[in-house]
Amino acid sequence: MKKNRRKARELAVQGLYQRQLTGDPVETIEAQLREHEDFEKIDGEHFSAILHGAIRDATNLESKLQPCLDRPMEDLSPVERAILLVATYEFVRHLEIPYRVVINEAIELAKCFGGTDGYKYVNGVLDKLAASERAVEVNAAKAGS
Image 1 (spheres, rainbow, N blue to C red):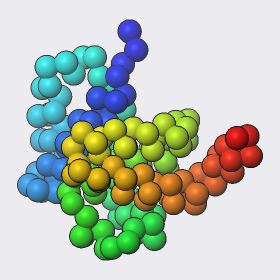
Image 2 (cartoon, rainbow, N blue to C red):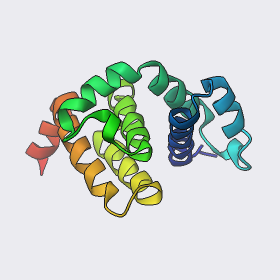
Image 3 (cartoon, rainbow, N blue to C red):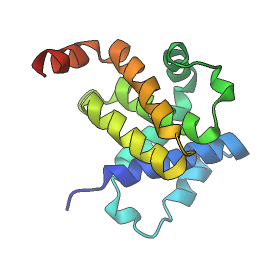
């Protein structure tokens, strides 16, 4: 059975959100989220990689995101910030995942957890980020369409 990466991303967003609000250690957050009733169906390896990687690399990921934002990172809602960190982590560390998949997954997360039009903001930010982080892939997609 194929493990669910969408749910892995969803739990990673929840973990990053919790980390922002509580400052709890990543190990504590991960243990709590692994108690999710359907965790065995989730791509646990991907979940763990995103959660730990986004926290570990937060400064670097935020420095890549900041030029694409219209406000300081600190002014983003905790939900938008968590979603953007997950997507940026995947852009940078998981080149095997097509950039359009990363963006679409982030949009779906923003529709599920974010404010009314938060998904539009997430889409715009990630389109800009893709142009710099995945320039070859973006240009190839544009040339092919």
